[in-house]
Image (cartoon, rainbow, N blue to C red; front, side, top):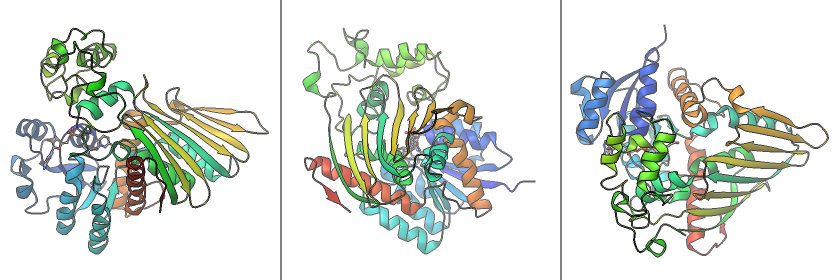
Length: 420
Ligand SMILES: NC(=O)c1ccc[n+]([C@@H]2O[C@H](COP(=O)([O-])OP(=O)(O)OC[C@H]3O[C@@H](n4cnc5c(N)ncnc54)[C@H](O)[C@@H]3O)[C@@H](O)[C@H]2O)c1
């Protein structure tokens, strides 16, 4: 019989509840949810019942929750600015931790966390879920086996998609730099982690340009109202809450519980539930009249210490999400196209090989299967003391976070070169 890993979750929202909580429930042969902490009482009650957790182990106040250690591992899936405060208390209690990315919007908290984790010898896995996907594993294998010779350069495009930009970075949790991490960290710490992993080197220098180009009052039509539901442009504006949360939801098959729609309500999703949600803030707001200040487009130029160069472009101005990554080597190219679901290997002196990503994986739910593979890794890491280079170590994660902070510093200083 398998050993059971006892887990506690703080922040039982989209990641903590829907992604990790549901997975633990599905794999009750490996995991047991012992305790929950969630500031929204209705949400806490919903998951207490669904995950069958004792009421006495469910808390709305983190101080009560942290009075004692309640499980082997703590899932920290609150919002960005809370992570390190909670992690430091958890480390003192002796929890191992699954820590949502980004670690923190404050650069000075990164080394503080590393020191505390090392001093107390607890294990921390930061949720860089993409490393665990079969697609990224395949690319890493091709690079390591020199299928394209020596890697020279990488072009990395992160298509955020117009509706995701509007949902998360204009109307939602990651819109305002006072409350959250800069977008290059919030959205692209995965990409920077992948780039340093693929390049197999630390960063030497970085520079960046980017801006909030479009989602501001200068681009607002004079007829637009504060809530889309009252607006004469409700049906014609691509970014209207009605078009994104009602029309697109219908095109997506009217799911009863699916991201991003489930962020609007804890109830089972119906047209009426979504209509009620967009009659108010925050998700019913006009995208040109929000309190957002994070960028909608940013380019980053990177030189790694081993001479590999990379260009990372993150932009919300695309119809479909997905990464497009082009690797240039001395003997060939690799192209990842997430929209088409393919990896193409182009060796110079042989025929091209096209891998269909769906055929490489059995379960592509949640970040191309990365969420699930990371949970399996977490189990092995804690129960079997397993370690390999699939996972991002806390040190590596901090390194890629520092790349994001450096990129942001450069962007705010007109593209100034930042050396490491
Ligand atoms: N690994 C990934 O790919 C990935 C993807 C999306 C989001 N994230 C990260 O996951 C984290 C959570 O994002 P989300 O989309 O689940 O957000 P969310 O808003 O759906 O969930 C956060 C939950 O934390 C609760 N909360 C806030 N403060 C709390 C506190 N002090 N104590 C207890 N509960 C508290 C909120 O009420 C909410 O239910 C963020 O840091 C985000 O950046 C990571």
